Length: 321
Image (tube, rainbow, N blue to C red; front, side):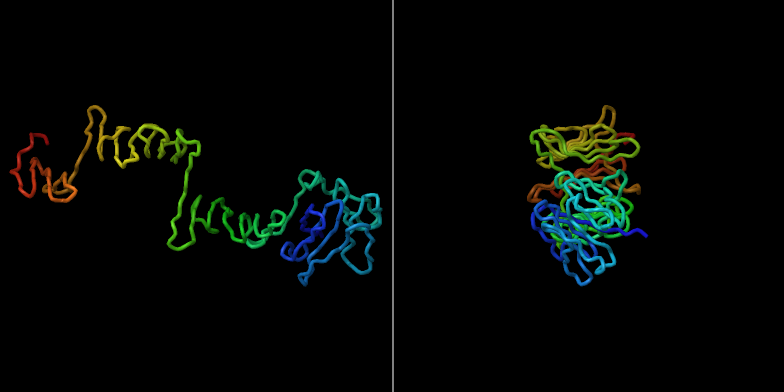
């Protein structure tokens, strides 16, 4: 039967793990050459020092049923003395009557599996105590909230989540779509920013694709004249909303709040009423004070004008209108 020992380590001299650093049964190693030591967290929640710090005496094997942990130079360990050994280059495991077996390589403060394909297991952890953390910051790191799930927490709170089916949630552990950004604060604004930090040029873009990339595009063209949010379809410019709020359709330089340029031979602007024969399409012009009102009313084969509340007689539109 195999036994997985979850391992943490520190290269800081004389550093002893806190109770919050380890879960029950986990092993912590201090690999600093001036203060090598090994620690576990027992079932009572206490940090227990197994061996280390200077000359090492082999513990009495009759006091434990789980073997002996020994930190020493490789030369100090012989076959027949079970234990875990940290020397200048490797972390080794020694079994009864078996010579030390190299399981880990160590370069400086970096420990890596000795053999390609070896798997290092860490505890799943929680948002408050992630399984993989930086030294001295036990509530920030990577943890595994469920099977086939990965999460990142900072300051003890889960921030980013990847579900088993690959969906990504920022601020939510159960995203319903490929990317969900959630602000859990009631009444707060949720913002997604696309930033072009170079200044004076380039674009910030959102692309819409299927098997063909860029079928549609919304982008802000930085440094153009005029600047604005532009819309493309099938790689062809369609419209712009410039920084003054003017909408240009078929033109990149709108000269009025609505500026429409149609293709040659096509209508620039179409107004359609309802489905009945009495349906009306209207163009209304109102002054800022709403004191002057002008209306162009288009009915079936008729055009009528209403200026300042006075309706003009309808005129018959040319045949075919």
